[in-house]
Length: 261
Image (cartoon, rainbow, N blue to C red; front, side):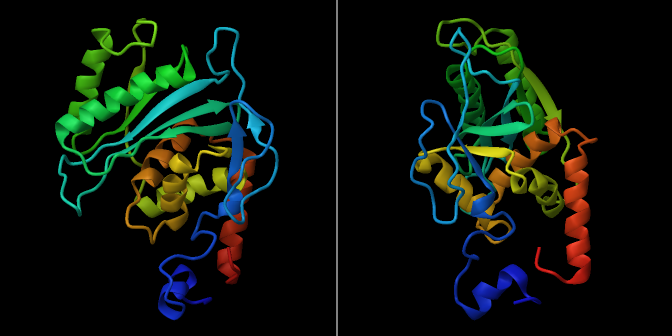
């Protein structure tokens, strides 16, 4: 078990994934609600604290500092083995991060990608209300540049609107990934392990597939949700955060000593 780490259960116990998560553990997630302080049923091993109440302002918009539509663009293929379009809405309040909605549709054509991302921007406006800071983060690879240009044109033309018909003024931000997938996953580990990332309580139809992919990394079939989550967390990370540096030093020391991380 010590030598194989997450591969142990597949080789010796005939289970493809480690119970409770590979790198990311089910007990690391925090939970939030938009309507109740009562905890909803949660997966085995999850935290049992009452959910954090994500409040709304008087105008009905969510009381958050920023809203991201985070996009991990695809190469435009719908083949079974093609990469999926990773797509999610993440909002932030102080140091807390909240998954508002996972919208990952799977492998998508170019036209489908445009439609999915434009729909995600409009849904962000519907769910979060009118916000000063809405950013569309798009990984600058594959069809990313063309998607950036297409989306900017739609925003300038006022094609993407709030439910009341007001144009959504969002900023499209190209994003350059930092390092391979494993390093990007390592970078988001402190945020989730520290409990600063929240999932919507009682919304297992949406958070279940999301958790399955994140907790299954790197053994899960896909990792597109890891990519778009890491992208948003990195974009808003404070490089001077002392707790992040402390966590990484503790993790490196544990790995150097051969301890279970």
